[in-house]
Image 1 (cartoon, rainbow, N blue to C red):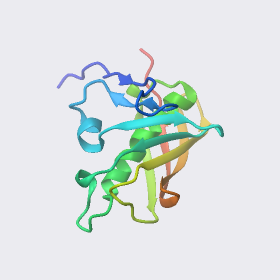
Image 2: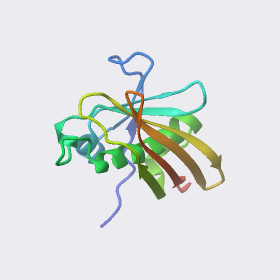
Image 3: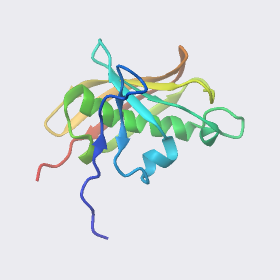
Amino acid sequence: MERSATIPIICEPDPEHPGWLTWTVADESRFNGHAIGKLIARAEDDGKVRVRMFPGIQHANMQDTLHGAAVLALVDVALFATAQIGNGVNAGGSVTLDLTCQFIGSGGLVAPVDAVSEILRETGRLIFLRGLVEQEGRLLASFTATVRKPTQR
């Protein structure tokens, strides 16, 4: 199978949420559009990047709480948003090398869920990140990750 060109990310001011940016894959038939839904992001004053999802019943587990896979999907997308919004790295060509997540609490299906992440260190090829997943002031998870920047062609 031949790889296609990188699908662009649409990152522009969100008219529905002043102060926030859209974080949408141009081809909404891809994973983000189906599995996560609408995402918005913004740089925080402390250098962190906040990525917000809006959970619904499609993100529920059998206990009618937020499914862990939805949390992990949000975290994975937040890594790339943090690299791009926080550091100007082309998120579309980057890949997750490792991701460690500790689930701390359960989330609901009504209030927005935020992944707040920061870059710990950047090298020529790698970005090391960490962050927290929050909902209405409650901690849902913590995470650390390594992202490889895109290959320059």
